Amino acid sequence: MSIDKEKVENLTKRVDELVLILNGIMEDLRQVSASLKSMAVSQITQPLTAPQAPTVSQPAPEITKALEDIKMMFPEDLESLLDFEEKDEYIVIQPRQFLGSENFSKIASIVRGIGGDYISAGRASHFRVPKKGT
Image (cartoon, rainbow, N blue to C red; front, side, top):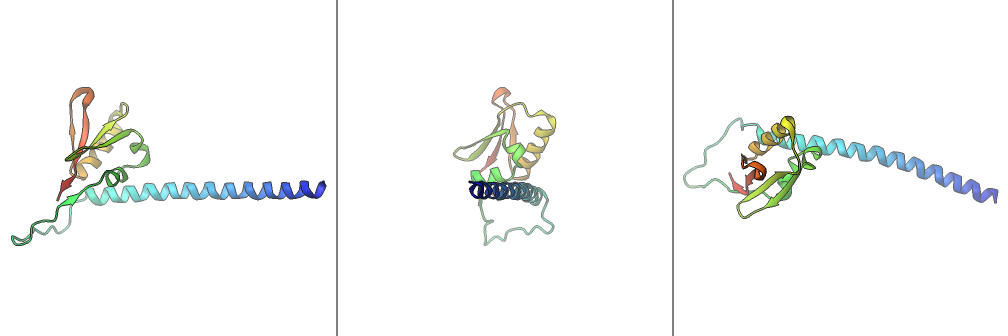
């Protein structure tokens, strides 16, 4: 019995070590995800350094924004405060709870950076982002 007990103890130690390693990896991935989201938002909100006007013969390409692309623009902590709904021409973003001025400001900045705006309508207030834009 003591040999079996030793084997179980060794396996338990190894499982515990793996759990610690996986937790470290999960935290690293969480940080990388937050950094990537932050970089994506900053690239969208920064003006282009050398904007080029479309030529008459070539219309500007129309960009279609998908619901998942919009969600990716928000850090996890802000995304968890919001509900996203796809409508015909817009992605509607509604707060799940009172946001407070700091969170509202961050969300409004991201939404404006991707061509959206805030619709003030009392309890039905929301942000909206057009699906199509340039």
